[in-house]
Image (tube, rainbow, N blue to C red):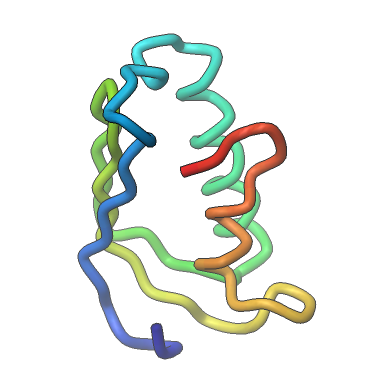
Length: 81
């Protein structure tokens, strides 16, 4: 994924397990996105959280340490997308 390009992105839970039905896990996803937005690493144009997957329309702005922000989002502690 390149910086300053807008992407439609989907991430699914392994075996389509409905982990994101729980508000607890939705908040983990939201907090990660909010953090990256506040740090000006990503811009989000739209998203939806479904029980077993998420859709994002987003773009990356700059590196998050040594990795692109897209990779940072996918490496949430304790959750494997």
